Length: 435
Ligand SMILES: NC(=O)C1=CN([C@@H]2O[C@H](COP(=O)(O)OP(=O)(O)OC[C@H]3O[C@@H](n4cnc5c(N)ncnc54)[C@H](O)[C@@H]3O)[C@@H](O)[C@H]2O)C=CC1
Ligand SMILES: N[C@@H](CC=O)C(=O)O
Ligand code: NA
Image 1: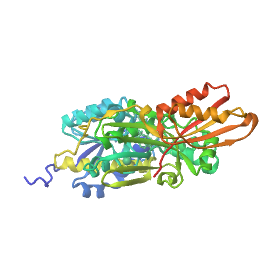
Image 2 (image 1 turned 90 degrees about the vertical axis):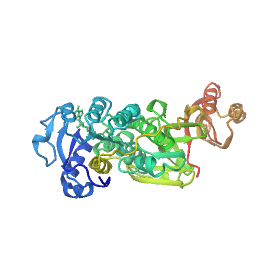
Image 3 (image 1 turned 180 degrees about the vertical axis):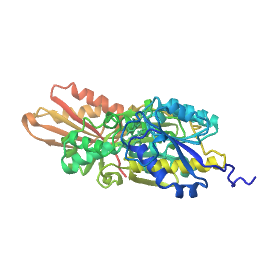
Image 4 (image 1 turned 30 degrees about the horizontal axis):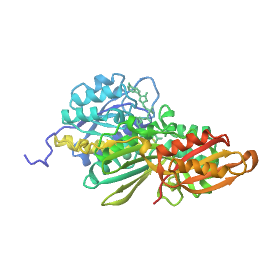
C-alpha cells in the first residue's frame, strides 16, 4: 500500500468531554465547518457524543440533543471513537477519562495544562503504548502555536531560554490596573465574565496556571521532564499600586512572567511578577493576549504572540490538533511523542540569577544608607542604583541590583528585615528582560 493513501475509509468519530466555555466553541466549529474540515482531513469528522455534567442546561449550541450524555466514561470506552477532545479541566476525572480513551484506541486532544504538567509522563507513556496521539497545543498560551513549534520546528536547535506571558487573566488584570487604574477585584470580575479565568480563578491569580504552562514549555524546550512541582511559583495578589508606579518610574511595566532557562547541565522554571523594560517586546502585550519569547542557539530570538485565553481562540488550537491527529488516524500513524532524553538536572529557584527592585522603608537618619549598602555587599549582591523617596517617617530607599543569585537576594532581604533602622521591606520584585 502507498503510505500516503488513506487506510481508513469511514467518517472519523469525535467525542467531546466538557461543554463549557471552550467545549461549546469546539462543538460549534466542528459542526459549522464540517465540510471544510472533511476536505482538510480527507474524511468527514463526525461529532458523535458530548459528555456534560448536566443534561438540563440551556446551551447556545445547534447540535442534536441526543449527542449529550452524562456518561463520559461510557462514551470514551464504547470502542469506536477515533478522537477524544477533553475540555473538562482539572485532574480527575479528566485523567481517568484520557487514559481510558487511549486504552480504547482513541487519540486524545486536551487543553488541560494542569493535568499535562502534573502527570504528563504517564499520559505520554499511555499514548505511546496505545500507538495513538496525545496533543495539547491549547494547553499553553491558547491559540498561539507554541507547543508544536517547540516540539517540531525547533527540534533541531538548542533552546536556551523561554520567557512568556502565558496567563491571559493576570495579564488582563495587570493591564487594567496599569492603564486604567482599575481595582484588582473589578478587573478580575471582568476577566471572569469574558471567559478567560479558570473555573477557580485562584489558579490564575496565584500563578498555578502559568506554572503548569511553564512546566510544559520547559519539558518541551529542554527535552527534560519538568513537572508542576519543579516550578517556583508566585502570583500577582501581592502586586501593589506602588509597585506598578515604581515600575513606571523606572521605564518598566509589571507582568506575570513564566521563565524557563537552561545551562549546559541544568534547567530551571519559575513564575513570578517582574518588571520588564518598556522597550522589551513582552511589555506591549496587552489585555488577555499572551506572548512567548524564545531564545535559541541557531535561530536567535523568536516571538510568538496572540490570544491566550477565551473560548474561540482556544478552540482554534484544539481544532488544529484535531485535524492533525485525524490526518494521522486516516493513515494509521501517530506523531512524535515527548522527548526527555536530555534529562538535565532541574534546579531550585535559589540558583536562578536576575536583577531585583527592592523598596525598603527606613528611618531617615545619618548612616542608614551605609548600613543598608553593607548588607547587600555582605551577601554579594551588587547595587546598580539607589534613590530615596519621602522623608522622616515616610522615608523609603528604592534599590535596583545588578544580576545576583536568588538565594543571595533572599538572604539579604531577611537580614534587612532584622535591622532596627528598617521599618519594612515593602516590595521585592525581580527585573527581567534585558535584551
Ligand atoms: N477558558 C480558556 O480561556 C482556556 C481554557 N483552557 C482549558 O480548557 C479546559 C476547559 O476550560 P473551560 O471551558 O474554560 O472551563 P469550563 O469550566 O467553562 O468548562 C468545563 C466544563 O466541563 C464540565 N464538566 C466537569 N466535570 C465533568 C464531567 N465529569 N463530565 C462532563 N463534563 C464535566 C463542566 O460542567 C463545565 O461545563 C480547562 O482544562 C482549561 O484549563 C485552556 C486554554 C484557555
Ligand atoms: N485561565 C487561563 C486560560 C488559558 O489558558 C488564562 O487566563 O490564561
Ligand atoms: Na497554544
